[in-house]
Image (cartoon, rainbow, N blue to C red; front, side, top):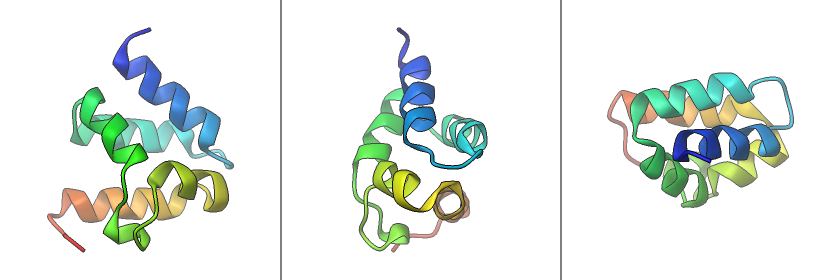
Length: 77
């Protein structure tokens, strides 16, 4: 399985709403698949210090997409 496919699988498995593809597309458009895996499992200040993969499970795609938009715009928390 390629790293890109692994990222898509992790996002699809974690996402509790229909936004998995949007999250995967945005994420892989902003960073390499290896960096995306690190980001998903790391802690993000835009998400209150939570792990994006956990936020996907608990709250769905919108907070994660907002964090990715903030990252894209250069925001740091």
